[in-house]
Length: 111
Image (cartoon, rainbow, N blue to C red):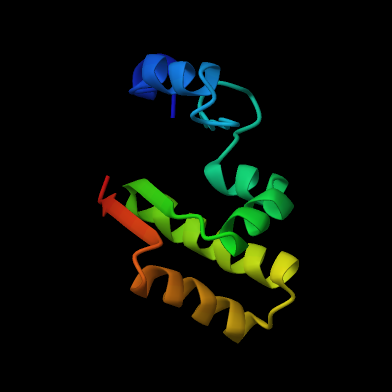
């Protein structure tokens, strides 16, 4: 929610980006600006690139509050629908298959 309080592993992630381990790093802090930015906004914004990564075998790890996880899951279904050309049902099954194959992992908790 806030970069000053919640950005754990900030130094490590910055180092991974600097040394090329991560090609890009996008972070969302919903309480740092007047207009809230959530993970699902970044997913939509980066949809085409994320679809290309998924099509190439990428893995997704979602960690945080249950409500956030639900919204992120929905965003990935919408991403697959929009960029993968799939129906709503097929997009939902695609994300379920990612979960079944351990390519979409969620570690969620109640607030």
